[in-house]
Image (cartoon, rainbow, N blue to C red; front, side, top):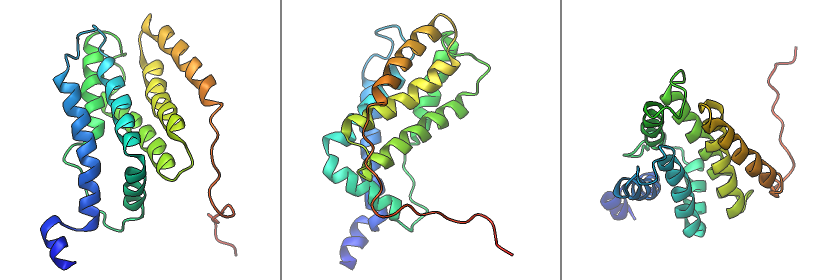
Length: 191
């Protein structure tokens, strides 16, 4: 067993490499396609969101285990070669140059928010609390929320309409409860 770790790294490094491979494949697909073919600067973010969600779902059994193992991992130095938020940041900058997203908003903060929302959907899906359709909807909901909040007219109205329809659909998602009794942690000390 020690020889395996010497050849491929720690368990956490292997798990990180698997997740990183999905992200790199999706990023590669986005860059291989003509991002401006439909003239919409928001298309790369949609492709990143939908493509990565589909990639995780395509190997759901394996990736649920991988993501769950990463969450339980005690190694804190595992990083991906690719920062997923930076793909959104670059696309948001382009959308600002195209006059679709309001330039008053920092693309770095918006990209991080999209990533954190996606990560929450991914972790909930990996834990088995969301099914594949729920994961897809909640990941898309996080993206659309940021885009609708920061888009300039007339795109804002179209994005708000899309977000409204998705919110109605998302309200039908059945969230599976966490196993076991709910746990509460005290945040204040008693005298």
